[in-house]
Image 1 (cartoon, rainbow, N blue to C red):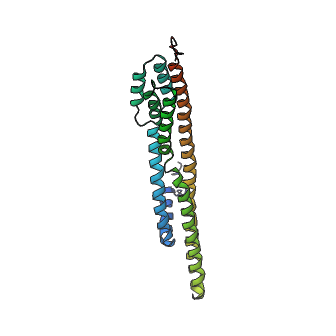
Image 2 (cartoon, rainbow, N blue to C red):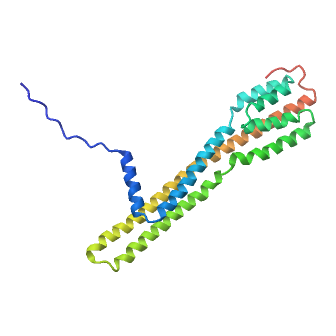
Image 3 (tube, rainbow, N blue to C red):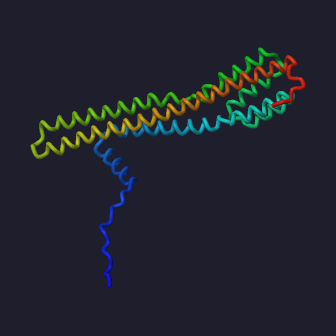
Length: 236
């Protein structure tokens, strides 16, 4: 009768979270004061990123279905219903600009154009606000990391001159650890800021271009309506 099978050596399960926590502990222990400065930079960066993501989500709207319904109402001469459609999305920058044109629908092409341009000047800064902060924050994080690197190297080489031979290795390793941890932490924050800034800038630019394009569409449509060219045209 076969005996019980021998179990092989159990593999040690690596915990990624434990590794991250250990790295943070070493950073704060050996990094000097500069990791704490970079933690503040990281907190400001994350707060800016989260706020911009929430704001851009709130400002955005499905442009094509919205404009399709809005244009249909304008073609049918239902300007009041078109205004109410815009009012149903009070946070949308697209709806705000469209409403500005509809509010001047019966006052001539010049007033329609001026009103929509004014609304564009109002909403454009709202979309791109605080996104440029991420670039200087990335630079600040990198500079704090470099200062921490230089500080660690100065500390280690300065202490080597006065240390006994059996302590030189420990002093050198501690100083180099402070230098490398500061550099790595600063670069991680900088990369996070720059990648997120590129995404947010692309998203904001896309939203503004969509508003500008649809503003031109509505302005031309209202001008045609004023000229009586939409009579009998009920197509969406």
